[in-house]
Length: 108
Image 1 (cartoon, helix red, strand yellow):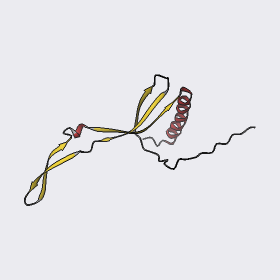
Image 2 (image 1 turned 60 degrees about the vertical axis):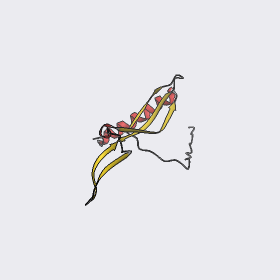
Image 3 (image 1 turned 120 degrees about the vertical axis):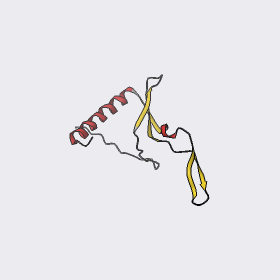
Image 4 (image 1 turned 180 degrees about the horizontal axis):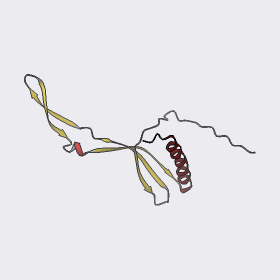
């Protein structure tokens, strides 16, 4: 039986990232584009507090952006572009690993 051996080389900057979502689609050239993001609540750009002469910093009076409670950030740091054949193989590979997780019953 013939064999093939792959050697894996990692760039010095290799650094896995946590993601909780993706956005993308099909390019005009027929490639699949996936941009991975981390979604989180917004952090204020600025906050203004009233000054209380006896206790120092008092109540928060202004936050920018004003709608911070309804603002979220989707931080996109990386993405991939792949052809149909590669997308099908990754789809199969992910499906296998999802089935394995479901068998372990740790998905809850």
